[in-house]
Amino acid sequence: MKDHLAERRLEMITAVLHARGECRTRQLAEQFNLSEMTLRRDFHTLEKRGLLRRVHGGAVLLNSDVNYSQRLEYEQIQKQAIGRMATTLLKSGQTIYIDAGTTTLEMARAIKQGLPNVTHLQIVTHGLTIASELAGQTPYNVQLIGGDVYQNALSTVGPIALAQINNLHIDTFFMGSVAVNQAQGWGNSNHVEAVVKRAVIEHSKQVCALVDSSKWGQESYAPIVSLGAVSKWIVNHGLNQEAIDAAKTAKITMMFASGT
Image (cartoon, rainbow, N blue to C red; front, side):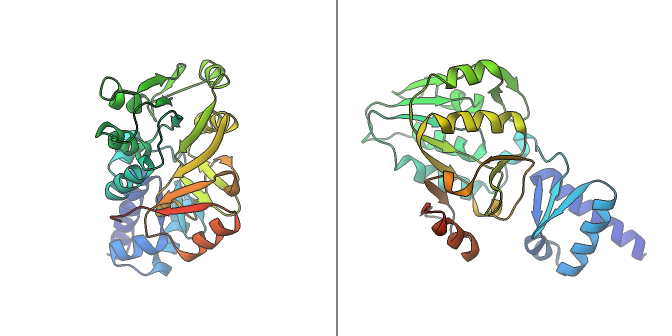
């Protein structure tokens, strides 16, 4: 009976990891009404089986590049609030780059709802869903970067994409990230997109991260840039004090999305 219950717990943990790509010990303990000590033992078991890697405060799925449709459903309210707040930074005449991703998609949807004080805007993206959301739906110019389609993220990557990005002059890059911590900085779940993000950063005057609080303390296999390379961070109100202090030390301007 005990073995059956233990295996059932492992199945539940694995299901969460496949849906999110990561999990926090405290959040999972509350969700499943388990002690954190029990969860840490289960993480250890799953790590020995080669199914996850333990990190500070939780665990990440090995090959944690989670399917786009699965990520789309996670933390939806927070993502919507973050996306709406990002549009308050927009001004007429800007050239902005919207990253591929599910949180940045909410920014695109907020733009589509209308920006009364922004008459003209140049929007660039390598996100297929971003371009699809905006094309023909706004009065603004929309440019989709070409290249190889990375199907797990519905984005364009590779040499053609990088060549086009190298000719851009961007005012603000609205960047997504699957992981952020003080030591590693901002990270992604795959290397091909991390390369694209770094190229965009090199051609941007400033970088604004659209990243919810659940990403703090997570580690990634594909680092993007150091924590302080981002000038603004739009996040929900659930961010812990450790993260706020780290961002302050890195001289990042924090913006907390309302409605979270």
